[in-house]
Length: 366
Ligand code: GDP
Image (cartoon, rainbow, N blue to C red; front, side, top):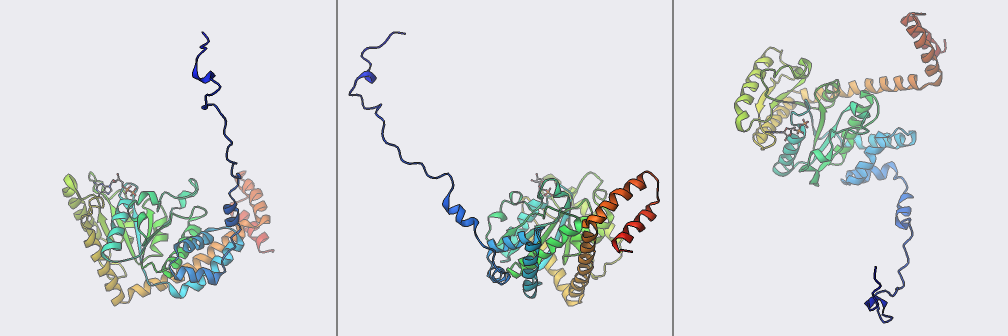
């Protein structure tokens, strides 16, 4: 290449290539972050005070403590829950279930906007999804699924606790309900997928159990277990919009017929079937009128309190069962014995009953 003799860059007067003194680089570690890390735990009384003031950040922290496996966290959490208990119980708790794709998140978004804006409610959305262990956190209750309410100051959305057995996950959700109520949330949704065991757990902690159904091609009644339908206080057929309205009405009629075959539930309330569209927000108001009617009806006939008392008793036994089971399976000598005995049972060396007895004898130090 030919050297260009009169190129401006070769001119000693050319200023473009002079090097200026740079600014000094900031330290890699942000000193403010270090300070934040040293934040101490609040005392249980401080947690309760902030929760009662409706401080959402502190509420979230307290929920995280209830979900923690650490003994020290659990101790604080239990104290906070105990202190919040007198301020809880004032909300309407609603279980929401439906198969994936039924429109749970779309509907919760629509219900939430209706409740917050038209009925001036404060809504907490919780979820129970024991299958979430794999994904380390559930897709249920995920904020990104509920775009509208996730921007609302009067909505608190919390995904399913990730770890543990259904019993453990359900207990944590129940504790979260208490914390949310103490923080002033007067409506609580507990969402679950209508395919597994978790409906029973949800049913045992709510006042009203809402089943979201779809209208399909004649197989309406097959997608969901009969037992789940029997638990429902209301069945709502989603996607009653556009060309789907007729199908949805047909499905609703079929559900009504099916429900006639069930005995009247102990509440004395005959479950209602309605159609609506979560996406186009059609029929939302009517669903909430129905739920209000149910609450008034069951409060008047005493069933509302009866159900809550029965639930409290159920949770006492559930809590005992869970802690006994944990204590048993986490004991090192039991873990060891289980490994040995399991192999012996697999090799058909001893019967499962003998194995169970021998392990329990070790546990009870016989
Ligand atoms: P989820 O799995 O039960 O939470 O269901 P989603 O809320 O994610 O909804 C599943 C699909 O159904 C999405 O593509 C929604 O846009 C659609 N969908 C939900 N509600 C309605 C509705 O009322 N009408 C119609 N046409 N589509 C809906």
